Amino acid sequence: MAGTAGRRHDRPPRERERERRAVERARHWRYEELPGVDLLRARYVHKTFVRHTHENFVIAAIADGVEVFHHGGSDVSAGAGALALVNPDTPHTGRAGVPEGWRYGAVYPSPEVVAAIAAETTTLRGTPGFVSPVLDDPVAVRLVHQVLRAAEQGNALAADTLLRLAVTRLLRLNGGPLPERRPRTAGAGIAARARAVLEEHMAGPPTLERLATDLGTSPFALLRAFRDTYGMPPHAWLTDARVRRARLLLDQGIRPAEAAVAVGFTDQPHLNRHFARIVGVPPGAYQRERKNVQDRD
Image 1: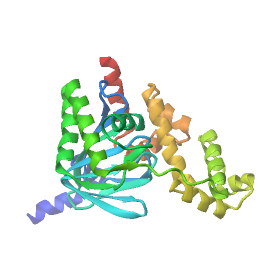
Image 2: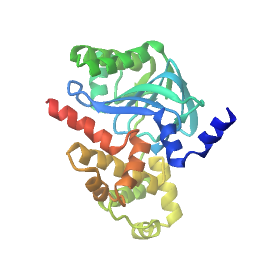
Image 3: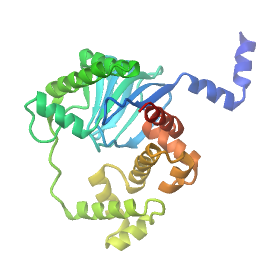
């Protein structure tokens, strides 16, 4: 036994890393009969998601293990039988809460999809969203996994029906109108102008000092205003925005290497690293799933 342990320890680092990652798996895809909805099945052990946002809602049903994610200023935990619920454009992270990691299935419906379901099946007014980031409800967890199973089997009627049932249940149990955006302050105005500059010059952004000078403020004042408005500093927001734009390019069939340069990453490995830390899968795997859907259309 000691000799075996020694040989295991002496293996090259690359081999040990491959073995470590072998226990993790993920599939991020779309089903053409559920427009406006992304789908994910994953098991993660060592993976950590950096602070990021989604344009769509996150409805993640935990099958086993525990996920911990930073949301609204503190860490929250979702275990088996619970759902992690994140509203669009809400900064959050993600990591394992126990040594064995966590296994989950998730649906990412667009705000338009959720609003249409809410208007038809609830009495919510305004823009609907989730009140709490964690909800213990094994019934909804089961519905989410049934949506994914139906999509994998190509059962459009079941997938559509179950998605509507799941979203309706979650809104009735944990729904409410999303808060209106705070009135524009001087700091929020500066942050919005800085964001516009970064969006326009994504591939070659200015330094924080140059950006602040051009906007007539100081670097630390800009940093504070940006973080207060968007929940993350400008450089983290820019990485998140680059990944979002890269997703759009990959959806259009642009090769990952070309998408990386177009959005301002140094090269494809740079894109790979950030893409996987935000989306959950590498850009190549992400694009292959999109191509499979298009080929079936």
